[in-house]
Amino acid sequence: MARPRGNIDQRIVHAARVLFLRDGVDGASLRDIARRARTSIGMIYYYFPTKDDLFLAVVEEVYAKLLADLGVALVSAPAAEDQIRALYARIAVASDDELDVLTLIVREALVSSDRRTRILERVSRGHMPLLLGAIAQGVERGEVAPHPLPAMLMTTVAVGLGPQIVRRLMGDKEPFASLPKGEELAGSLADVLFAGLRPR
Image (cartoon, rainbow, N blue to C red; front, top):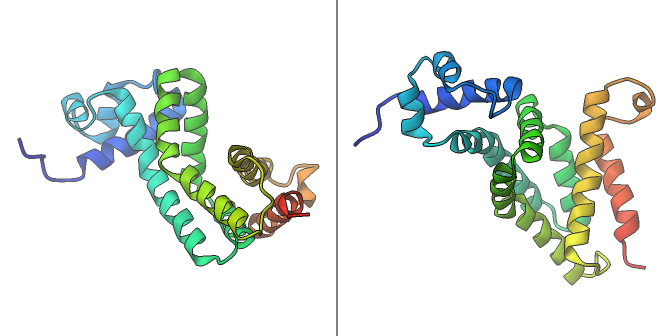
């Protein structure tokens, strides 16, 4: 059976994102999603057989663009430190939609082991190989001290992602008001990371 014409699937995804953020995946009603998307519950099931499939579509819509941007950042930088700095700079300019979806991912990963597993499967095919590749190349070229790759991956993510999200969320509240923002903060975080990873 051919798919109906139109942007019904996009409308469903956008409606689901709003309601998933407000009510959680389990709390969001398919009836409310259908109403907001101006379609029927049957069309939701046509495009997304399960609510978890709809959740992953909400994540994928934002994650695919972020992943493409991260890939470009890695290709355009010659050295490991420049690559990580470029990745951090991209995270620094994350859109509100990206931050909303990150919030949704974290919340749903804590609530549902099935969703957590599916998200981990997706990121293990997404940004994790990109970061591991950049770090491994840095080790091969002697730009980064050899440490266990998983530990370096976790450290790179923790140093680059967490502080920038906290800075965005806290705004100009003390003690964060004196911190730089955006790309300047990304550069400072990369300096902190590479001061610890630089070969001795």
